[in-house]
Image: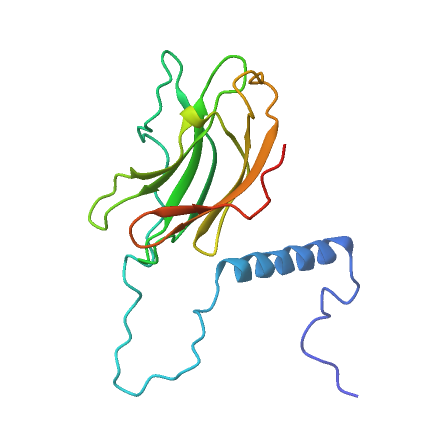
Length: 195
């Protein structure tokens, strides 16, 4: 038998350092694979010589931010606070809108909520309020708030009379708003108003 000209391999016996090096290399491969992703697949193949173009900028637009927006809410010496927000393309134009639940940052009590729809023009980066779904003067508190399937839904907690203390709403009404092409229409399921 002929002896090999190559010296003995250094890693014939495994040591903890070998396992550590292997684990580190494997972790690096996993981390790198989570960063580098293949392009999205398409069902149809493009013909040779055909150019593909990316989606229009409107489809890739980010939803409007609530930062710096002046909400039509009179708060006096305290500021307006966005307590909830959700986004979605409510009017089907390919640009998302943001719906914000806002109230005054009162030091005590339960300040009423306002619900506002924000959008921005395709050529403008500044968001603006385009619709008011709930007026703060209605004295409602908004819960179970969501945007889904081009509709805004919420549960509205309110008061049966002006004598009910603002700490303790005694009515609960589910509501949904949808854009009809001209305005947001509110609907309430029949028999849904509870006390």
